[in-house]
Length: 191
Image (cartoon, rainbow, N blue to C red; front, side, top):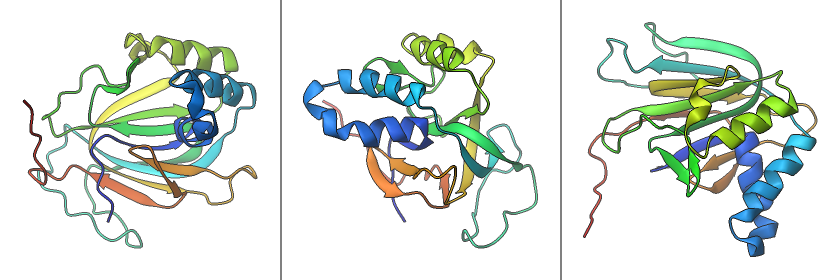
């Protein structure tokens, strides 16, 4: 089990975060620079995504092991081609990336950010630019869904490109993952 306090990402955003490490000397500009590089050479990945919407009646979530099916209920499952699947429990994932404007630090919600393929490079550029002020939430190529839990099962040899799993900025090899909020498992101290 890996604990995360900020985000779990796969696809475009994970590619940008992990592959731009070699340009760390550029500061935060590395993300813009590498986002342009990734958009120009856009990759698509195939996966199965299942999620439990936040408005469902299921209060407690006992997720089964990854090799077992999800429980019957309000889970929504989709298999297809994606550009990126990213989740966050906070509004910002960077100083200028307002990914989930409605998020509150203690709402117990995971905001699932889904960009499906196909998408034009121009649409993707417009979407990324709109993330600076949160106006991306109205973009037609994006789904931003409040969920209680999700399971992502990436196809491991997708499009001939390696994909990453990015947990709070740390790289893991692409693998099946399930995510849920663990209430009262940590404390935030502020002064």
